Image (cartoon, rainbow, N blue to C red; front, side, top):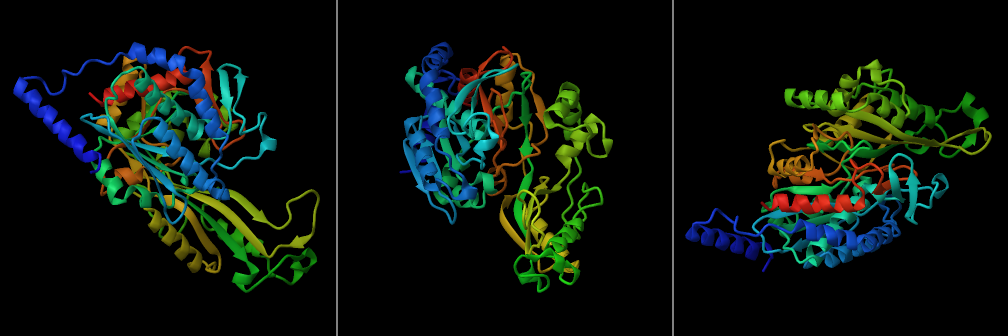
Length: 502
């Protein structure tokens, strides 16, 4: 029998008993001994940290087809060690994923979304080897663990697993049942996440949950915490122009002197790219492209409140920019960040890019691109509009190779999943900022859209930085009492689980 069935039966039986005894629901359950759990977290610090280091040492990189099966097997092992009784590796048309359930005999069930794949890396760009997880001092922050996946997302996820170990080892009851869905393709746009989540046995247990959350390092370097209510959707694709497909220009690289009488596939691609956006590159001009819904009054208020707290000067310093688009003011720039879709060129690749010149006319050019979508816009509509636009403008020969993507996701500020976060943070004296949605993306749509229609969010104290970049880090020992280190992050998940179980 599936674990969700006895869990529901026990919950119903407990409620019936409570009614017969005249008790208020399940409030007769003893309060957890959080002090005992915290002592266990401290005692297990080295073991928990080693768990994270060992995980980082095994990079699963979907874009390079590296360690896809090994990454899934390691994730399954971590789940079993953390107490999940049923753990399965599920195959898809792409990379495998992991589905696991932990039956705590609790009244409520909580969904978890993990990713165990990481972005590519070039060790030459790092000050510390990206797979060694060295502890280094970071001025103004404290001691950080540096490695690929440290904050995105193995650090926060390892801290959550540490919370499960600590609850169990301290002899305290786990207050909720857990359902875990973990994938190894998030960094290529989660092309097969639906094949994991929409399997009947996975949907069955998720449908009974209060929602789904992803562990996350939500604190900035000053200790501020943002609760994000969603995320933009994304499309990852390549546009490829070639002499072979075009029927003009060379089918392979030729001498550049021949440009006087031979068409260039590179210029062909550049001219096509120029039709996608306005002259300054900031407004999408694709014919028939889906429109972004206007920002709501509620979300506009959230942005204004956050803009008053966040430092514009620090943001510009961290990003290495001096101006926002159109020289917008700080609040308006943030409104644009959450409310506008984007067309971005990640990279342009053609011909020779080494030292000096090579005087070639390349036969092929590639633009690696990502498109961000505001909730309400549909990925399939955007792709169809792009293809039709290129065809209409005379660029129908350009290949549109979509590697991944999904729609945006949105959750109400009133959802119980969000209110539990606020309760935990406010009990700690933290006044969180509500934020309409992340400008980045994760496949929360698979939970928030029909047929599940569940709330989905991120949660977790702690701090990190450098995601997708060299010297990615996760804070382990904080020099600022307002910012939690690793053990503080672990305890934030303990408190969140007990709050969700109320």
